[in-house]
Image 1 (tube, rainbow, N blue to C red):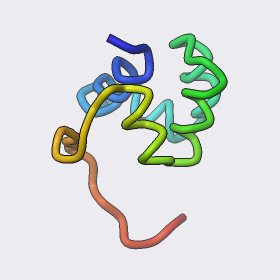
Image 2: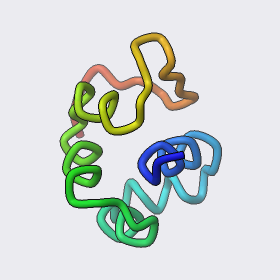
Image 3: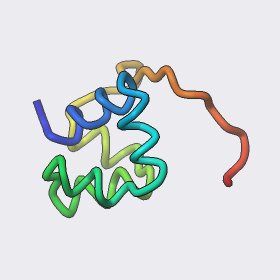
Image 4: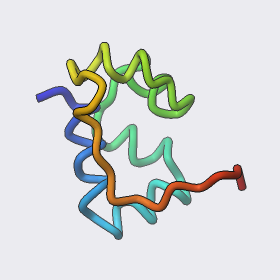
Amino acid sequence: MSKLLDLMRKLGSDAALNSEYEQDPQAVISRFGLSAEESAALLSKDYEAIKRLTGLKDGQFATNHTIRAYDK
C-alpha cells in the first residue's frame, strides 16, 4: 500500500490524527514519510494525481468526513 493511501485511510478513521492534520498538515505528512509528489497532491487536493499515486479509480474513494461547500 502506498504511504499516501495509508495516510488517507487513517485520516478517515482516526479523529485525533484528522484534527492534527487540520492544524498542521505538513507535520503529519512528514511523519508518514510521503514523497514530495504525494505531499503536493494531497495538499493541493489534486484528485487526478491522488488517483495516479494510489492506484485508486473513480468510485473507490470513500470518506466519513463532512463535505464543505466553502473554504475556511
